[in-house]
Every structure is written in structure tokens, then in C-alpha cells.
Length: 229
Image (cartoon, rainbow, N blue to C red; front, side, top):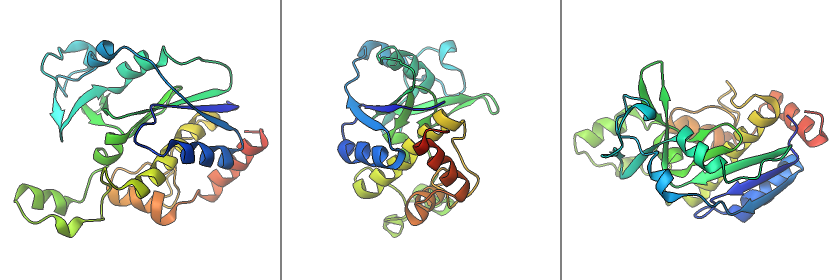
């Protein structure tokens, strides 16, 4: 589907002006920041109380906390947030959230943290970018055994790593846009910024060290810019 404009919501904590400018330059379309109003009480009802049961089947009286964050059902959130956007033909809405977003996977019957949920509106979770891609196995062993973790400094994204986080956010926005326009959100090439990274090391490689599109998706980008995608 052809995209004519992009709207960004919930941009506190990120460099929204630079992001909007980057997306506009890259895709040759307008990109605007907007405020999104929603019901906080309804959003609280999206909290997950049992990671092994789908949201509609469990009570959230005692919501789960992971790494200091409550877990939220992403599709429940999108139902609420999507009601607040003005849908029109060709408009892609990307919502940023400071909540840790999860989706239920029927293949193993449990929730998993997500960095991004692709739809319209799409949703990008800042805590999800930090928490969803796994760190190295050695890190988790050292964490459980109380070893010094400073040896891993710089190997993984952190909340105060603004420069790299801003660059990674660009990549996730591009996944949202490619999904909307071509149906292709992810790439199998680890050197492409559309690579669906499940490990922090792969995320940093595709988004920072490589930081480019593969030839296939570069061709699609040119079609988007030309209005032929």
C-alpha cells in the first residue's frame, strides 16, 4: 500500500525532530509528530497477569513485573491507542511507548517481549528494544552467579545509550514503513537494517555496524520514493 504521510506519537524521551527529518528525507514523504490522547485506566487493563495465558483469559489483579517493568498485551494496547488516531488513506501511524510490550505466541503458549508490533498503527516499545533481544548466554550466567558485569559495557543497548538507541529506533521505524508499503517487514540478511534480530549482538550489528539496507530492500526503497511501490 502506498504511504503518503507518516505520523509519530508518544515521542517523549527520543529525538523526535531528528527522527521525523530522517524518515522524511529517506522516504521522500512528510513525517509529523502528533499528540495521542488515550484512557490511562483502559491501558492499565492491558497489563499481563499470567505469561502462559492469553490476555482475555486471565485476571490482571497482580500484573507481572520484569526488569522493573509491568508487561502489557500489545494488541490490547493497539485496540485502545488505535481508536485515538485519525485513519485516512495512505497515512501510516507509528506509536512509541515507554511500556514493555508483549504478544502471546501460540507455538509455545506464552508471552514474549517485543520491540515492535507491525500494523497500522504500528507500535515501538522503547523498553522492548532494550529487553526483548537477548543478551549473550555468558552474560546471563555471570548475572546469575554474581560475577562482575562491567566487562559487558558497550556490548548491549541501555536506556541511557541515547546515540545508539536513536539509530536503532530509525531501523524499527523503517520496518514499520516497509511492512505497510510492501508487506516485507524483515530481511534474512544480517547486514540489512530490516533484519529481525533476536540477539542484542545481531541488533547492534544490523543497525549500527552495518546500518544499511540490502540491495533488495534498497530497490524497494527507491520504488517507495518514486511512488511506484
